[in-house]
Picture 1 (cartoon, rainbow over the protein chains, first blue to last red):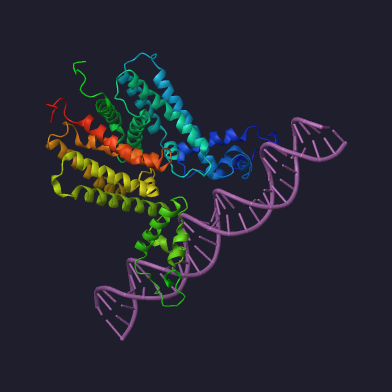
Picture 2: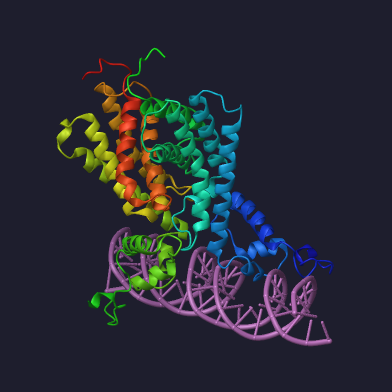
Length: 212
Length: 212
DNA sequence: CTACTGTGTTTCCAGTGTCTACATTGACGT
DNA sequence: ACGTCAATGTAGACACTGGAAACACAGTAG
């Protein structure tokens, strides 16, 4: 039972080298495996093999760590959206592009429930503009998509940000309900499909010569 | 204002009488004022004037208390929706009824951010069917509304629960974004309006003689 | 060589959730 | 009237947490 010791070999350098990212990595794993509530700074320190006060040099606060996780989550979400939208070149029909982005978002959210809960949490610490910035960056993808749809005549005119918020919020809401087990996970794909369909029908220009 | 004291007179009966609801009340206040994270069983016990282990008789767990709060939240939400839908008799036009319900929901959510975060939290403790039941009851109001719309020909046919989920999720998502300060609170009403408008346009029967 | 700065360590403290043993009730059957 | 019993509240202990302060160890610039 000596395996718990803090690395009996004195080989470990006094300075870890990049504790900060090691902390973020470990925290992200712990977040996925046990949820944000069970995330303890001391646990992370133990797992990495540093003293319990070491993390404090990199995160002033437990909340600061959580905020950093949320920020990283938004960055990843932004990348996921970008990838989904880039795929297949820029020349797929608009509805397909919307669908791709939404499906990618929905899967990201249901595969990282605790992370999303963190991202949507109301209580980031006061000066957390990093989180806000990262969120805005990810969100910009949606706004751009809407703008594109409007430019191509696939959507009505209107504040593209407002329309984007509604689309984003719908997916966010559906995945939240799935993640909170309020609705069954198997319904996700069906729900997303009809949500996209309704969105497109509700947001397209009125009574164009409908035959297409 | 002598009610705040821990009752120095030894008159306080050994048994509080209804500690459980006193705890829920205090917890709800604390939730609103300081968020779920800062909610401590010992604090509540102190505030009420009982020993620190007393709450354990009524809530096995801290999480059990939080679950009970979430459950109560869903009950209140259900009442809010019911009231919004009952108002003005059953004979207002369908779009107005939808709008009323949605606005009521949105306001409830933005006025009780911490509560809603709890309600949408993924991690209720394993055997928390009470929460699920309360949520289903509140949610039933929405499903009923959709069903009504379909019966009156104001909405397409289709699984009313699925359509209801989408509507509910949209509002839930918007308010979450407002509560997390991702978007400004002032945009709420505008967003809700266009969300409802888009929902109705996207979900109504196709190409009825449109002139109305 | 020295001072300084960035990181990690140790030691301490208050506070928390949870557990266990015990005390105080009121209700109920006899 | 009385003993029993379940419900409820109390007291104390434990392990753990986040946070603060003082200190130790390097690399680096002067």
